[in-house]
Length: 400
Image (cartoon, rainbow, N blue to C red; front, side, top):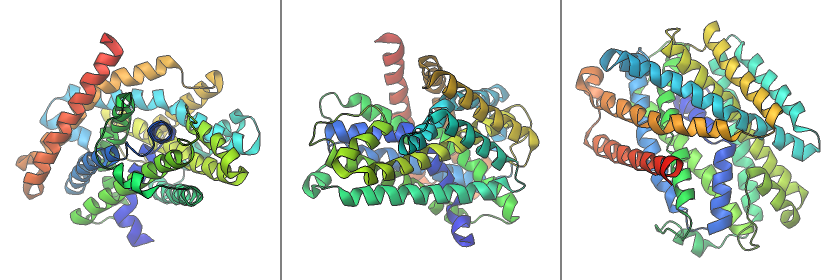
């Protein structure tokens, strides 16, 4: 277990925080609306996510300075602060959705009000923060939640009647009519530069914990393994929706609706399994999302980035509390918060991507561990994807 966590720990955390209720909703809709035909986008989005997560793992393994500090010192202090504050705003805006996911998952399964569980698990998450070795707890908790999600999705898949000819055909690129919005949403959520960015902090936190150098090759493999797990869970949910809901013409708007839709077909057992998986996704994102937002705001404000810092723990707690309050007050993620998060993300993500790419390429900063030709080409293509997503989002939000 110790050797496994040394290699996979940071990658597992990144996979768990990226695969939240919103990702489950998008992948459910892709399968329910378009059957297996959009499976190919998983490979493309995960390829670029793997490239940037691996690149960030290498930066974290080589440097003691945080990525925001490197940006401030080598580019512009204002850009570093803007990235930290921006990520905090995005994390805070989406936190209510993670809180609601936890509440719905347990509330639907037990027939109890969701606000009870939102308050309870927010309190548990904050309590975990103030344990002496929070990072060690975070790794083990995320690994446990990932295993729970994997077990639930695999069990659900066994109950589904998968058409394997259509499954394999789904990896051939095709864009069914009306699917472009879902393709863009999935790529934007799966190719998460914020998650990749935070990977550097996780690698450095593990170095502090073990008080030893990180094997760069192993850290890169761990990053790719975490991304592969993220991909498997995305495919599992999509295939389940394609095999079960598409033939019945059942369309879903949320991950919770998918859980309920499974019940008439598979019985209470299967829908309960899916809700356990939803809980794993929501609770891991509730903790992970808040940790990213609080840590990067603290680093931007000059408080450092250690998860053992009381100031950082307070900032993480603030994100959790705000998410809890909004979830209970509105019962859903308010449209204004979604617009704020999307607006900040549109203009923030290109800066993050370019910063990671330039630092990863710099011989001055990275020495012999700078990007090789493969990473330079793949990273540049990833930036093109990010810019296309940015233009698409600007058009949808402001020009359409």
